[in-house]
Image (cartoon, rainbow, N blue to C red):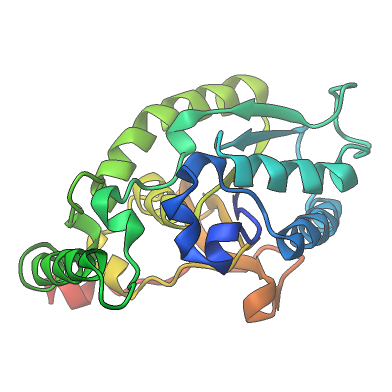
Length: 254
């Protein structure tokens, strides 16, 4: 039973971060480019599942933010006519607020407006979080003022994992989860039980990127098979990679 982690399409904040000054994070919409990306994502996912047929049907989970819901709405136009979908009303979708993006607190408004008090405040926040990240805690554990660390995001996702396992054990489903860049990384590290040491080297995949988690036959446990779709990086894989992503633990314990 595969799990596809899908990042939302290009949002207005991806295009211009100053939108945070006027719009709450959960209400940020897609750009025109993002709407097109969502449709193209639907075509990729339809091809992926054609090459890797689900055992029964596919359940989609989605963050309740506007940009993720609009991404899901765009790709559903292509995917609702799947022959293996048992839900007559279309793709089976569940919305869950535990899939929301990492909260950045005061750091969410980080951008420069030259010659203003806001610039000085943001420069202070930037230096503060960099000092803690580089000298005390690392990227995975550092918590912005008023926000969440990646470890915090992983902790709230753990309760979601219980629901996911229950659904897989009882419904024998494949799952597609539409969420956010940083939240996807926290999901991967927590669900596949990857050591946080490696997080500092982890890239964030582009908008509409797709990452695969699946059973590793060698261990019987879920493993990270990496990015299978990322139009910005020109990645388009229609078959599961032969091996999970390799991370050398000897760098930690050696």
